[in-house]
Length: 330
Image (cartoon, rainbow, N blue to C red):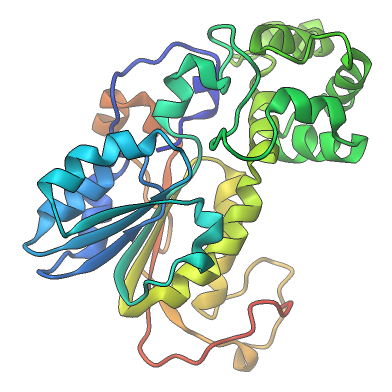
């Protein structure tokens, strides 16, 4: 679903939606007749369609915060009547969905190819557009307004932490100085402003456009993407049936880190090198199905360059496992 970082600045090399790591997802789910699945990131419906076709009687409940997803789901509703439903909802609000007992749950994180390629959404600066960047344009504020009103601390978090921009101090200063000038209103002027804040030596040596990382950070902040992941994962795990499988596809370390830590906690493993919790105090609720994340092969990358940075992690819920307190620090 999500693109690689430099998709923000270079033309798309493929057309249409190509579900990432599709064969690997289907192999992990081991679809069986009558199975029930939850696709938390419908996007273009590629994973959902493949699941519906994988065995007789399979049903899929899908979520997507993008209002445009409803049109993309119309053909599936007709073709798989009674077996497919789409809920217009951010997966960060998964706790508002009553359904449970799923045999498999999938997250395909990040911005979708449809959102990236639709110029008017403002996710990319390949073409000039209003700097919006909202995955759901009905809620929140566009990036242009967020940049005009966010505190300096919020800007630092977006550019330094979410964008992982080395020259974050320069970029934050440039954004603050540009407030009220109109330069933050459109993608072209915003990209030019950020690029101008990057030292010339770095602008000319990187393969990425100098505004790419900052655009990523602003988008993540505007959509609360990391917060949504952290809220959704524990809720999703509780919605798995015993023996059910959870698959999560991420596209950069910011997305992958909370997934990795959460999976390790569920599997009774240390979350990081700083986790010194005694083993007898750990609760094992799941078993890992991917000791190391699965990544696309050369053939998939050649067919879909946007898949190159994808990582797939999966686990299986153990039966009758006790429920831990997810709010407690390890």
